[in-house]
Length: 393
Ligand SMILES: *Cc1c(COP(=O)(O)O)cnc(C)c1O
View 1 (tube, rainbow, N blue to C red):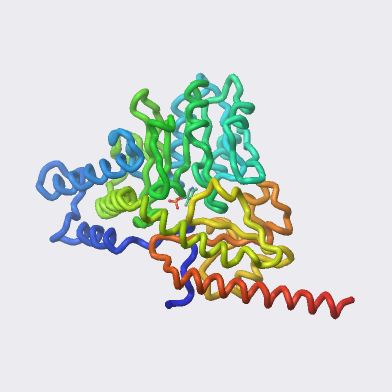
View 2: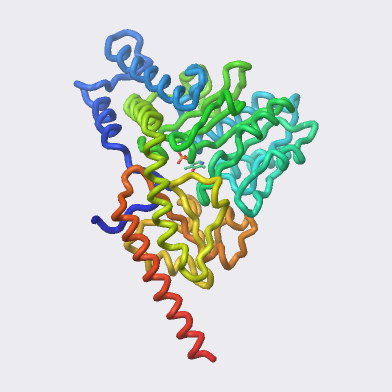
């Protein structure tokens, strides 16, 4: 087994070798390298065909009209384009109130904070202690000038799944636009923009075995939902997002979406089994806490608190496991996770928490190794603490 063991799939996934091969086929002169916007030669036409084929594949993954798929650089850009683009397009006439939650990804939170400085009002819903946002919470926060509800499908730190269908129905009934950050759910669990009444949806290839630097914003076609471009240029992507399309990355996300759809059932069953094995191996560790709902969660992400221990110290001691204390984006700061704090987890427990996330290439051996390593390390650190306490008294 190669050490450290990679258990940080929620931060990013490795590219599937089949996807990597398809990407390689779109780089060199003898491959599909051309500018898909080149209309005057065969090279351009072939690139365009590959891009449109990928558009159909991504659309199928989320049951969308392919004409609603806009290529972006990732979910961060998609979130920005969805939220700022919508507010800019509809402006004050449709209201200036946004409802989101306090445990969104920073791409949504920072965008909302930016809009607050530009005349919007934002309500940040507090998730319940299970790490869930309910449609009742959204309903209570609706105001006469609410224009947009922006919520994540699956939380990236705890893995809990929000009831997007129910919230989508509510938004439709109240005629409020609904944006969903689906970076952690796309390709992992069922996602259907029609059945769930989603108007705008953000996804990112590198969370489901595609390359980094490519994502999608889906914008509903019927009834049409408009967003104003945030990147201006050649008018690509029906004016919503300019810039030469990266054929290789788009082919990558297309195949990644196709594979994810085809293998979703078997893969999620396999990961669920691995996670159950992992949890049953560690659940008896004294002082362990599972953060977030025990049932309503994706199989690949688990967030654990270890009473009395410090997450950073634990992480250091667990150097054979590539894991994190929370999201990659905030792991540079020593503050406890804002996600756990929003869920009402005590500051001490939040400080002691780790996220472990598995995926397509995680093996049973790796899970067994992780269980053994965590058990031994926690026990060693806990007995160290007891000795220290003993010597001090
Ligand atoms: C990873 C992630 C993002 C950011 O996606 P990028 O493609 O890396 O910009 C946004 N939201 C959630 C929930 C994520 O997990």
